[in-house]
Amino acid sequence: MPLYHKLVRDEIPTIIAKTGKQATFRTLEPEEFLAEAKRKLHEEVAEYEAAVTDADAVEELADLLELIQALAKTHGTTAEQLEAIRQDKQQQRGGFEERLYLVEVED
Figure 1 (tube, rainbow, N blue to C red):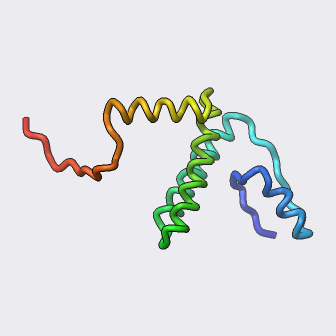
Figure 2: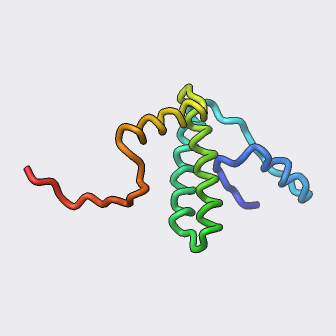
Figure 3: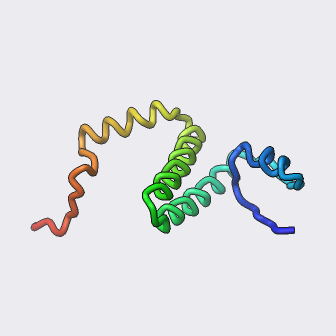
């Protein structure tokens, strides 16, 4: 029986049960969730970096967005508040549309 020891999405128990398999889950305490969500974030970033097609990349970005929204909630904010902060930062500092790469700044 394979051991996973990783954070999974909420519907995974149902999906596994539909296959006729049995799995063991436990609910993480808030501190454990934060640590495991950060670990999962790294996993998803690696999967995004390894994506070969645009479709695969977009799917991994969706996974990252889901995790980011869950992490925002653990820090006491909502997806809407997070988006407002992102927009404020974009207005003040810009986005990444121009793909600028800083080489050096003279003193």
